[in-house]
Amino acid sequence: QFKALAPLIDEVLSGREKASLFIVGDRKQAIYRWRGGNSELMDERTLKIEIPAIANLAPQGFSATLDKNWRSRKEIVDFNNSFWAADIISQITTEPDLQQAIAANFVTSRQDLPADRKNAGGYVELSLLDEQDEADDDEGHDSESAGESNDAMSGLQLHEIQKIIERLSEHGYEYSDIAILVRKNDQIRAIIHHLSRNGIGSVSGQSLMLSA
Image (tube, rainbow, N blue to C red):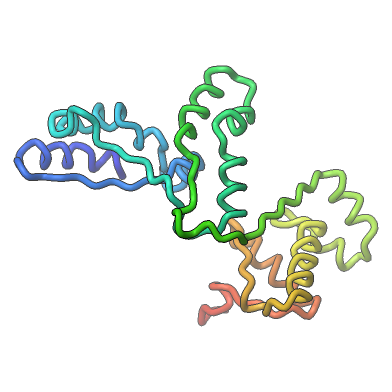
């Protein structure tokens, strides 16, 4: 979409003295290439190449990094700063050129809480499941549980989701307080089926469709 719009934007900026352009982007999300996302488009040098008129309108630079997080609490912000630190996230590859590119992409990723919002709170938990663990787990379950394993979700993944929900419920959270985010529709169906079998009610966008 940006490639198609760039010439039009350049024409508008070139032909109007008071024309302006406002772009907001997230480098963390752009790396996944969802809908053609490209983190390089948030780099001034790249934008000046794609839209030459920008260099004439703002020769001294025009970008700013939003370094305050107004949405999350301290524990979430601290986790994000540690996880996305340029010198750490760049180690996901051993290729020097790619390491350098990743580090450059995240060099300004750190965020802080506003001065009046230093309140503690928030929680992050990572569960790492390897293929051998999943195979052993399916062998140890009854045939019905093992049969839930498919290309969408393994039996161990489904069981882990159930355990997290049950633990949150014990701490006083309602099922309606909990959201599960996945990337594919077949993963949604696998999760809903598993939770239903284990007495946990759930609602998805698909279940609300008239054809469901």
